[in-house]
Image (cartoon, rainbow, N blue to C red):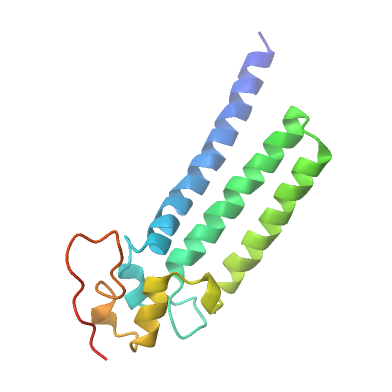
Length: 145
């Protein structure tokens, strides 16, 4: 009976970490898909680059948090070392991309709607119409150049 509260506490800690990661990953996925774009029009105070990459920062931070919890879980459950090592490589990559997104992300890592918005002059009022893709039910509106 003494072990039950400790096991429950471990479960709650892992659930909390996964929830925290999901709360960051979900808006990040929305940013990459283009369903959440309002953040792009306004640069944040901590960002060093020319454009805001907040949505992409949330994606990579959420991914790093979820992978960190997963590698901890694989160690606790006794998975092979190669599995933990592969996840650690993913943590390092997503952590580096999270830190880099405060200033700049390479063009290849940007979604098409964001690239198109930057190519068209990155006007804040045009961010919602930039690069409407297959997810939009309305016809594309012309973007001001």
